[in-house]
Image (tube, rainbow, N blue to C red; front, side):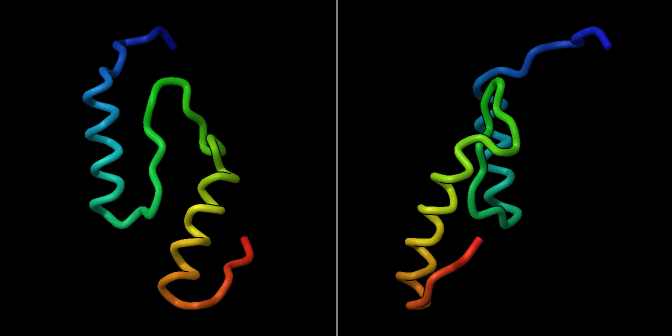
Length: 60
C-alpha cells in the first residue's frame, strides 16, 4: 500500500498519552518503533516499580 501520510511527533506523543490514559503501564510511540522496542528495559523498569509497590518480584 502507498503511504497516505506521515504521523507528526506531536501525534506520536498523543498516541503515547492515550495509551497511558487507557491503562497501559508503558507505551513506546515514535517513528520506526516495533512491539519489542526496548522490551528488556521496560520489563526491568516495571519490575522495580512493582517490587516497590507490592514487595515481590515479577517473572516475565
